[in-house]
Length: 66
Image (cartoon, rainbow, N blue to C red; front, side, top):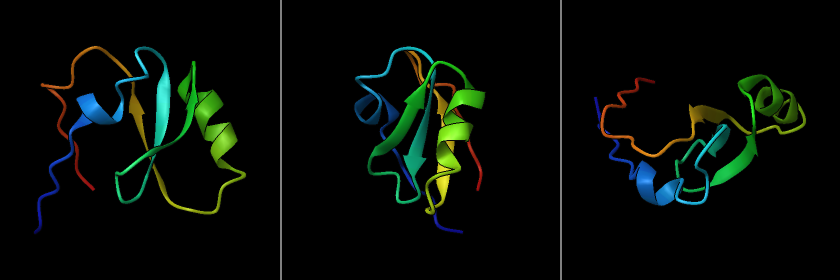
């Protein structure tokens, strides 16, 4: 299985609170909002696959799996 290393600190530097929807190639933030529900409702209008993450100050403890 191929591991993707993603620099969340760089990717989400402009998002300190709330939730974001990230493109499937993990290169840019497509959507953002205060709550996960808000971001998921916005995502219904977008055809591409997104990944949802909480925005925050630190991502050192974050582990994800596809």
